[in-house]
Each structure stands twice: as structure tokens, then as C-alpha cells.
Image (cartoon, rainbow, N blue to C red):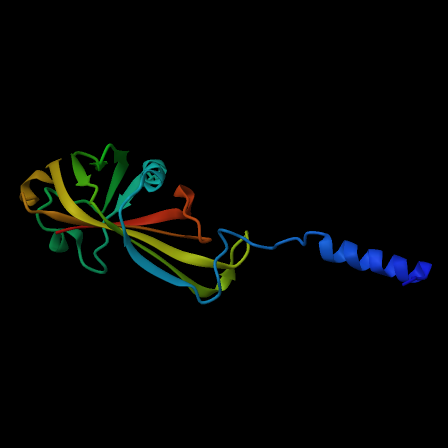
Length: 185
């Protein structure tokens, strides 16, 4: 079978198109519209390294709504509305040091065996890397101990509930988590 020059050129062009690898537009960290994920996870080395890099900020505010802090906060010696704060994950516990004008205290929050990881598309904002910007939380519950201003209010069975909150794509980074909330009970 003989082909004309134009038919040969057309066949070569078709072969080149078929055999040339196509660019794939996949994104490992991109979230999907309407995405929702929630699950209990055991902290792996990667997550523990992220937790070590997370920062609490320099100030902790006691949230009481409209009530006076002294009427709501129980078990805390001379409660203040605002404390200076230093804290980070050291070994298997968050070490937090609180100070107001005259008082100081420290909390030890033991890292639990499992934590809850949550991410959801709350609609309306797009991530810089593609896909929706997810609202994310890492939630921890465990045993807490303390000293200084916390000593009188903590028993051996005292528990904490710590939430890191943030936004970004489907991959977790320490910088994603810009807010936190801590409850002691």
C-alpha cells in the first residue's frame, strides 16, 4: 500500500501525538470541592516533627464571654485575663509556661496515643496551590499536670482538651495551624 507524502506526514503527526506522554495535572496536596475528612490517628514521626515546630504565640487570653474572669475560672490562683506564654512540644509532652504581672505557672500536657484530625471544605476560599482552602483541626485529649498558679486547681485525674486550628490544602504543615484552644477540666 502506497501513501502520498501528505498522508505519510499526517500519519507521522498522529503517531507523534499518540506516543507523546501527556502532561498530568495531578496535585497530591490539592483538596476537592466538598471534601470532608475526620479520623483518629496515631502520631507518626512526621506529625510529631510538625507538632514540635508549632508555636503557641506570646500571649494567652482567658475566654469567659461577658463574665468576670474571677467568677468563671476556678482552681487558678489569682486568675488574670491575659498571660504571657512560652510553649512547645518537648519529648512526649507540651510544656507551657504562663506568667502575668506577679504570678507564674506551668502546665505539662502529655501527648496522647491517638489524636483526632479533621479537615473540611467550608466553601468560598481557594488554596494557593489549587483546590479549596480547608479548615483544619488537630484535637488532643490527655492528662495534665501543673505547678505554680495551677497547683491548687489540678488533681491527679485532671484532663486537658487542646485544639490546633488552621487552614490550608490537604497536606499538613506546622504553619497551617495558626490558632489554638486549651480547656482544663
